[in-house]
Image (cartoon, rainbow, N blue to C red; front, side, top):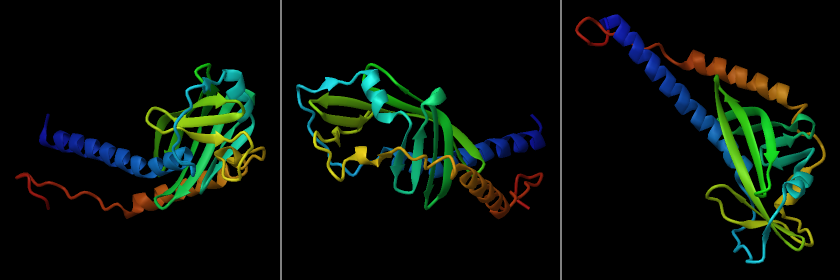
Length: 202
């Protein structure tokens, strides 16, 4: 490999690493928002049973999961999942699909877009039920908490599920914001210094 080709190769690799780091900084907060709950950790009762796919489906179909600084829409038709989020590091948006299974899981698989980068992510939540009380935890390492009390409480995470589509109308504006962030970030990155024949920087 010639000196110039080697330099171009190194620049390409460092550019990819920078893109991955930038994406991690921007997408991670969105995923944290999606997966956090105000509920405290609970001990799962021994008599709790795994919810069926039909039971989980009935909770989430055609609902928007409204979280602080963002929302995710689980559309019944086509099982489409769309989401947006804003954080200190910028805006992100996602499109993908949602699914349920007989292990009591809701899974959200989508491509998250942020500042010129995109990455696929899959987040799953398990559900157990005792009577009318529903427990939830993020897989694989989350803690169980009461998602919906038998007599729903004001601070149940379940209360964040709403019928209104809080994503569809907002998504075009968020996409445009991400484009602007990308252009701004591109303009603010200084060009890399050229290496001279001796390997020094000019």
